[in-house]
Image 1 (tube, rainbow, N blue to C red):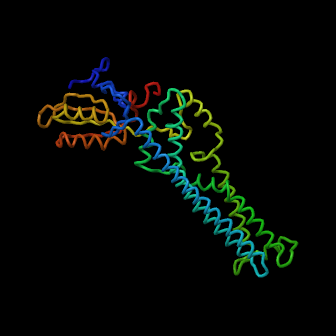
Image 2: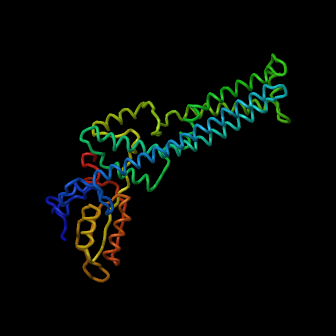
Image 3: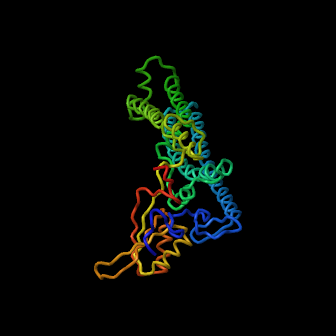
Length: 363
């Protein structure tokens, strides 16, 4: 195999092709389009069926975690109702309301953690809705070039789509601020009116005492707690990474969405960073067999270059191939089968443009 010409590449060494066999110039005509991935070939109907079942499974996962969110909020409501009923009873004390404040905050923390898991599953659901199913309805009627790689990367390396602060702030604003407002109002009413009404701030502070803890300290703790909650709810309003919610878009998000629509169908929550890409160099004495496996099984283009080992003075072939993060293990396995003595170098690439990767127009 010779060095690939930049002007007129041969058909079997053209720019790296994508995983879709229809994008490869050397693919044999098939009676029906197939999806090829790591040696597996599925007919279009089989692939669609698999995606539908996968979609239903992810929807079920998201629903389960959504139910857990409702369960945690129900705990907070029931606990608050019970605490207020006891506090305003004959022998109740306002310390019960303070204890309820701590319990509701604990429930909020648990719910925020569950909300991140809910977003983990709903992100995949939204990704399939926007880039697979929606693409069937809008010309040119095919998914974005990198959507499958994005979904595969998320399956192989799961990561929370939203931060803990966004989850905490969103659940706080949507549900828990109302509960906190009721708790604050109940505490003030309880201290002010029971067992008898007081008419001065000094008397209010004195009655706010809990055991050996002075009323001034209790009042400051309660006040700072509610101020901190309000600050957190305000500071996290600008975080809009959640994909499972119907949220208004402001500022830069609108411009980003319009720019994406000009290039084709793309969801607003898709990560702006490109998936990790690599440049692989394979030093081998079986270049023909290794390259053939890569071309046929991975549908990636390969360029052969001559090389000389300076220590031994022996000539070797150097195969160059651009891959994405999920394809590196497959290439290593293929090379190990064809030439166990090969030398493989995997280097991160900042950008790869061309067929099967990002369009040159995006550069």
